[in-house]
Image 1 (cartoon, rainbow, N blue to C red):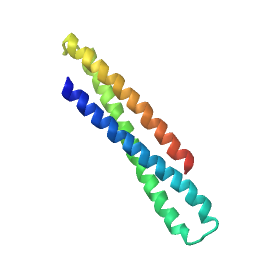
Image 2 (cartoon, helix red, strand yellow):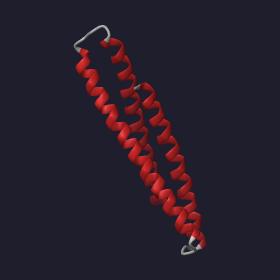
Image 3 (tube, one colour):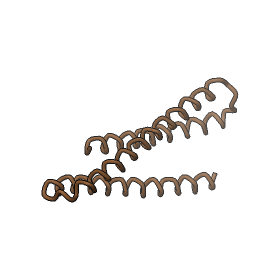
Image 4 (cartoon, rainbow, N blue to C red):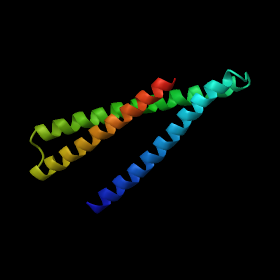
Length: 116
């Protein structure tokens, strides 16, 4: 159980770093949009940011799809009776964690799409 917690802590730390970098990218993108109106040379940089943003959006959509598949899988195995009670409890715990992560990713995706 301790190994799982350590892995979860590492995952959360990495996710926080990713979120921080994404937020920085969004802020830079908004600033760049404002500056491009004043400087035509920045148009190329703006296009690069747009491409990068599109990649992030696609990755977020892929994450949502993968987490939805995991959620469906866990729902299936908890209902088919092939797991012990302890395993069902563990699976439900993981399912709640997955759904929480899914909501967070969707929130990030919505934020990214609003700034485009």
